[in-house]
Length: 227
Image 1 (cartoon, helix red, strand yellow):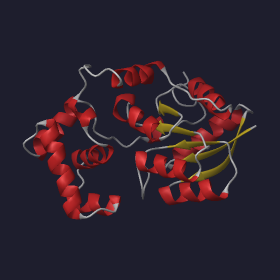
Image 2 (spheres, rainbow, N blue to C red; image 1 turned 60 degrees about the vertical axis):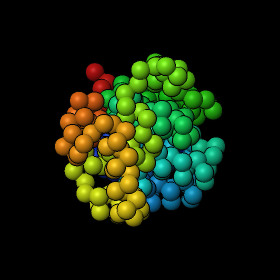
Image 3 (cartoon, rainbow, N blue to C red; image 1 turned 120 degrees about the vertical axis):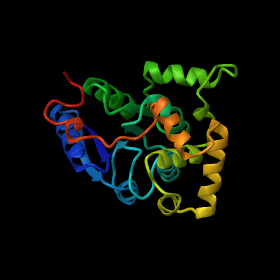
Image 4 (cartoon, rainbow, N blue to C red; image 1 turned 135 degrees about the vertical axis):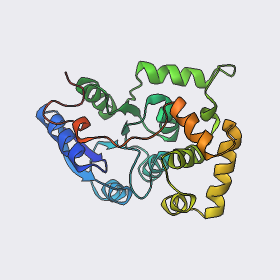
């Protein structure tokens, strides 16, 4: 029996995922977390085999949380299950130490296959993620400009295009307002945007805005995209 902890800030999603995974008889969900602090408490205090982690967690989000988990428990496999498309965060999450990256639109059997692979000590790289990784090692590949952003810059960009103020971002990321403003300036420069309005248009064109998953997307009795 593979012991799991599910870290996601949507309780409905966690409950649906728990039902989906425990129904198979292969997996036991031994803990849940709704924030970065709760996630780290589970990592430090509980015995389990695989962490299923959403990137958009209150308190500490994105690849920063992956890095913190791997710093404290290097051998713990982390499966990132995110609403963000692979081309947005997959390479960054894997570079931070995740062993697999799946979107919340993945089929239930793919998720289970990935968990089996991680529980046995391996990594799970789907075809689309493998292609992204291959592009990363090709120096002349024509990549979107946002791929040149650092992890922190990308995090700030996401927050900006989703309506967060510089002061709110600073509070969320535990940074100074000046530091966030500097990141904003770098983002605008690297993406060739003159102002925030152009940055928002760029993000929409690249399909990298964030949308909160609706209850319909939470895996319930039928699982994520299990039709």
